Image (cartoon, rainbow, N blue to C red; front, side, top):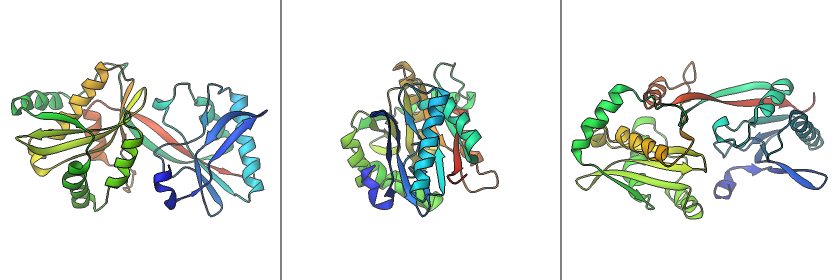
Length: 281
């Protein structure tokens, strides 16, 4: 998290029981509130293999007592999506539902590889047709071309935003985690058409960024690259392929076009809940 430490006031905690570390809370402080870290896609309370209900309750009570002693009024806990857990964390969800209010529910789109792939027939049709284009798909440790000629310009053009990570930050992270952060580009006749930046854990693959040029849209290059990677990681034995959230500022809070696109690529919906706890109750 240190690459963006200047943006947050860190308040990460280590929870011990009888001098044994039993849980972690990546967190930051803002005014009178603690957030399970706002600089992380997910962060919540992190437990080891021990997740019995009474134990989880005991940890949350200890946190609440500690926050009160630090003049903290509110604790916002964003749960880690269930697809990332090696051990079920349903007890944390249940305990927080009793002790706190549901503040937000985000939709996470992911493919469960234990189920048959449910890719829309139109996507598969275009994938088969695109095979005649003789695309080159390249895994690279260089992020410059994708960031500067595809991702950043298209985000500015379409949404007037910048990538969450600067080029320098993604290069720094990739150097620290070379086996977990990867870049895949799709090229035709020497021209970069689209790319996908992958964040990979032992069991989950997450497409952190995906973007295409105008010419790449004509060839449906991004869809082709997604389908290539979906099949690649299924063969490699991953459990889930996550395409992240589809949330926006509309009435329902969901980008319906993005939701449809990801569902047509075979994704199902998973919830990522954020609870708000009153530390003074």
